Amino acid sequence: MDDQELRRIKAELVRKRTDAHAGITQIISAQYEKLQEVISSLDAMSEWMTRVEEPLGAVQAGAKKLATTSTEKHDAFEAKVRPLERVRHQQSPGSSTQPGIERPSTTSGGGGKTPRRQDSHPSAGTAITDLAKLEHVVLLLALATAAVQHGSKSFPFIAALDVRVRAVTAVCQTSARALLMPLLRDRNHDRLAACARVYLHLNAWSQLVVLVVAAAVDPLLTRRNDVPLATVLDDLWTRLENGPVALAKILEPHVPRDQALILSTHILLRVLEYLSGTPSIFSPAVPSTFHRNYTATTTLLRRLVGVLGLAHVADAIPELASFLRKWPVEVYFR
Image (cartoon, rainbow, N blue to C red; front, side):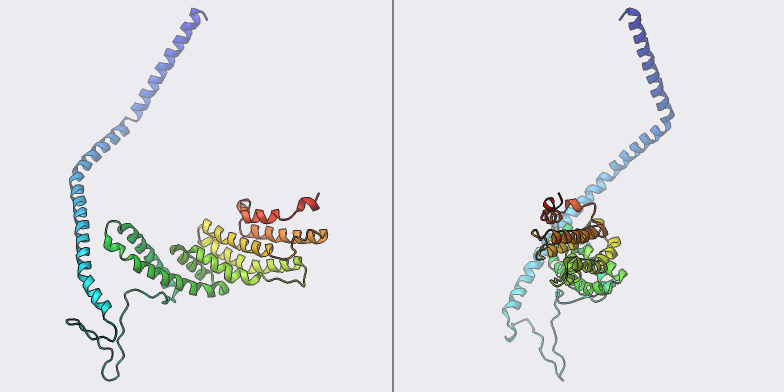
């Protein structure tokens, strides 16, 4: 490379650097007003942060003082209640009244009703029979649960509410089950959707899946030895399509995709379990029977996987892969 070429390259570099500087200057000039606004906003924000530091410090100190005071009041309250609890537990229903503590009379004059003690905790046997009311209660319960979980670390007396929250949760689960079972037969779309929301808010979707499988799938999985397997599976497909598959399709638009896949997958798994336990389904010693059984079984599974929306995850279901490996197709279809 001669001197002339070097001078040319150097001149080119100088020109490009000049162009770059000119471009940067042009950009800064075009955006100067906006940059000034941003800088002014940052300055104002800095001043505002400086002004609120002192009030925030006061709030933080107040919160710490409140936490300490609340804990002390809770401890003092427990200290007062503890002796009263001991007296209450020491008295049997037939014992005499302790001095200074008046027991309510178990009978009233004139044949009145016997007064009952009102339990502060709801009984698990209680049920909410109105679905709209149950959904409202469950939403409030979800908020209460979140509040207890968040506040129990800072305020010990809030942790005591966890017992009551669990009792209400048990009532809601009992009520949801009682309301769901008739809906699995009636298939009212709106009420099924509301019931599904209840189970989602209770974080009990697995319970709904178990109930659907037990009530809508298991009764269909009967065994018949007097008819060919292909006929049995064809009839089973019709009943599955009109039963649990229809239920899954009703619930699918109203629940998250993951929850819908869980329900669909468990319907498929229960059918696979039924097929695996069918006597002589594989029939390796009879090629013609093997072919008919294999065709009928794979047709049923292909239909189920397709209509339940599991085609994109079928390869990731180990139970399905394990069932298909039981068919020695390489022996018969060479």
